[in-house]
Amino acid sequence: MPAFGKLVRFKTASGQTFYGEAKHLPAIDHDALIGAEVPVFNNDDEPWSENFRLSGSTEKIAEVHTPQAASVLAPLRAVPIFLCIGLNYKQHAEEAGMQVGDYPQTFYKPAASYDGNVADALAGPFENIPVHPECQWMDYEVELCVVIGKDCKNIGDTEDVDQYILGYTVGNDVSARWWQMPERSSGQPAAAKSFDKFAPIGPVITSTDIITDPKKLKMRSIVNGEQRQITQTDDLIFDIPAIIRHFSRGMTLRKGTVIMTGTPSGVAFFMKPQAWLKDGDVVEMELEHVGTMRNKFVFEKF
View 1 (tube, rainbow, N blue to C red):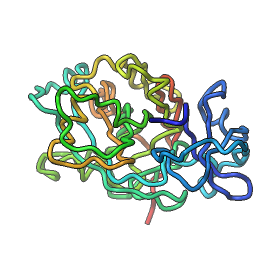
View 2: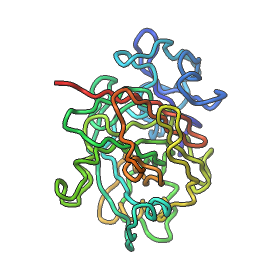
View 3: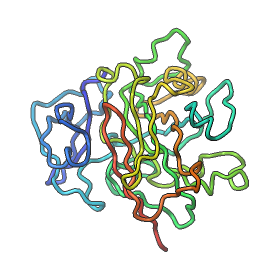
View 4: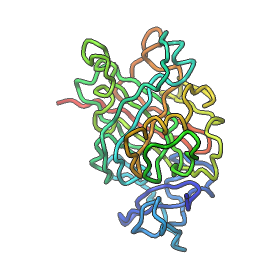
């Protein structure tokens, strides 16, 4: 399906927006992407379109990247919905002291469109993440994310799930744990995780041609230079085919849907003492063959 290797979405110095091919770059992080010259795709199509092809031209990612003028954008223009899995790493379930059932624990983040300024839940890989004053006990969750590239429903046990996958990226399931506590959520985690820009993803979407086995990826989170989480994705309890089949049961998964597959151990909630994010903290999320996001958390004051 994919016509790309590592898909980046960006703005040029003139303000034009393009999808570009970043697989030739030596690294996929802020410093490597800002100012890089990349081949670009025909600009009228989305990456799951049959007509999505390289145009033969190159463009330069704008050299200036600020919260007001992002150069590298979220790798999708819009996300129909974020489908999320909780408690899906063995070590995370152990640190939480919780039993895993026969089916994945699921929740949702809202649909999101993205123009660099207004993003709903979606955020870019190097954007500031605004934190509402009522969002307390702020936490991070590094996650392997799957991008759906073809509408699907009721996927059978023997059907090849890979045909519906556009590619993979890394995300942060940002969480205001205060709103996740049972006395305020009745056990429903979505309210704690659905504030504006609480779903940064990127910097690129890596194709299934490059990531052929998503169970063999190294992933980690870093807060202010300190490693907090590290895992190999073979610690997943429910693998990606099982997750996609589960979500597709009776529900159509639309192109552009992002599935967040769960976070490993090491979140702030289970640290002693609990190491909640503070105003100005910088959180990096790394996934092998995808790259590194870097988001600063900015606590709003009204």
